[in-house]
Length: 447
Image (cartoon, rainbow, N blue to C red):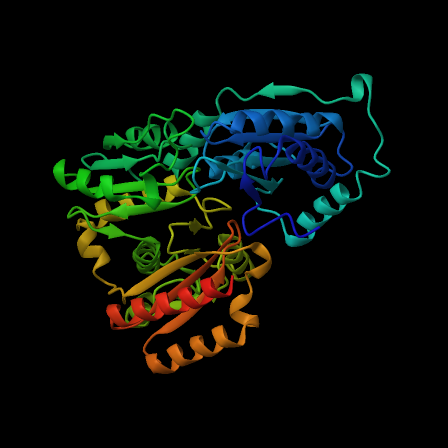
């Protein structure tokens, strides 16, 4: 069997690839691996707003109960709420049922350990091994040894209290627009910013089970960009389906992506004397403009592989303060153990207020180089084509030589979808667009 776990848990089309049977197995095996030696272990279970959440939650919880675990249902809350509440509630583990920014037909399952961290590759492999061995040697529990379900009625309230307290001061006097992607932040984000005193305008916060991420949120911020200008807001914040990402919109309607947010927040922390080693952590997908701006600002940059888990690993190993991805996963180590969209938005809004400057002015510290991203649908077994096909490798080399060190080519297989992502950066947008499309066309011809 190929590896079940991608860069962010197990993900697939719900009821087709990610079936109730698989969810049951993951719940059962996950409970065994994450709660070894614990009597009646307690596992938190949450979900986003997509319609398949109920289906997978029921199956997964059944698996947990079958091996004696207590499943505590949080309902619909953001992914970072699970990471926080595992610690706050003294649970043994946590599970989020969500496919994040993906369309409604997808869903996913990601685990957190008792410290609120996503699992290591070794633990994920251990879960998969138990499933592959068909739970060989695992006793069948009966009677009072079977687990039970309870409900955490105040999960959203407790997370909102936490998120609001990450800011010293408040947001009174600020007018903030929120795009909740019809997802898991639809209550928590609004409650947090209202609690901090902001005047909140909100769009896309009426989930119906099938409209999550549909032309809204961090993957489609166009509505928010118009809304901020039309309603003269100080800034806008766009979350994804499970609210571990946040992108911003300045008062002029310009998109402010994760690179800008990390740079603005990193510089602020440096000036406050709170940035360990004056270092921010980003991935290879971050824009070259960030690297150039960081150097000018006296900031150091640590670079990791793509995935917020790798950013977090680097942060924790070196005790760094902040890091994240261009896509809006931003980790503030002092606050949470995963990307937290609402906390990111709170911190950014606080910087705007404390600095007394518009977001557009704060974000002007970085000039973004033109960047083109082309996705090619490809079978999972062919995702390494850019490393194995000689003609594809040759074309990539020739494009890199043409850029003459003033740009780059990055080919990255998606960890959650059957895609290869082709990213080019350079000074000439027309040139890099043509080159990206040429590489994509050649890969498609090989399928």
